[in-house]
Amino acid sequence: MMTDRRYRQRKLLFFYTVFTLVILTIICIFIIFSTSDKKKYRNAGVEAFKAGKYEEAIKNFDKALSEKQWFAEKLNLDSKYYKAASYMRLNRYSDAYAIYQELEKNDNKYLNKDALNGLLDLSKTLMDTTDERFGYTDADVDKLQKFAESGNTKMYLYLASIYEKNNDLDKMKEAVEAYIEKEKPTTYTSYLLSSYYLEKDDIDSARKCIETGLSCRDNLYVDLLRFNEAVCYEKEKDYETAFAKISELHNQYPDNKEFLKEYNILLSRVKPDTQFVHTSSDADYFD
Image (cartoon, rainbow, N blue to C red):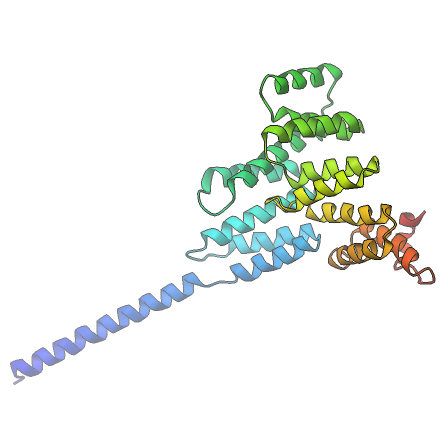
């Protein structure tokens, strides 16, 4: 007959074994659900975005978001933020706007609020002003101007987009400047202003706008600002520096035709006997 002591020992051993198995099970579940390929896909998406491969970036961000993982709120928000930015660069403004709305409602701690609000305004503006189904008459523009002057500063962003679309650059500049008097500058507003000043050969003003844009938190049009930076040096006939700047962009965005065209132009300046870097499929860009 089993003694009380042996019975207690076996009972303790049983409970110890069960407890150990429970702990091991919890650890296994924790490991399974707290690790995934989410970060790998997110990093691949960011790399594709920074290379200007926006469709590829979206596919990777979708994969990242579909991966189930605990404690991944920051990764998910970051993936959505970059996915929206990819839609912006593909001119799919309504898709970007929907994501920015979601981020505005749900995020309280990870994303920069000023940058997010600026992108929300910009995506809504471009969604409305670039839709080919709608046109803005002079009367519409007058109404927007009155709304803007009455205190609705965001209407100046609408006006700037409309004027830029209509190639009315002087009015575009006025609208952008009125907007950034009340709202924070963005890479978009800085790009518009720097392009305006480059058109006027005002290099110093263009550079100031580029510096402002490169310090903005949204990072959406940084590549276009860097392109304008190279153009500043080209206009000053500092072809070596301009070529170095555009070479960095061309290496990062090898599929961008505008960067490639500028690269070949500057290459002919610094190395006149060097062959252009293009194929027969690029011929239209060198007319």
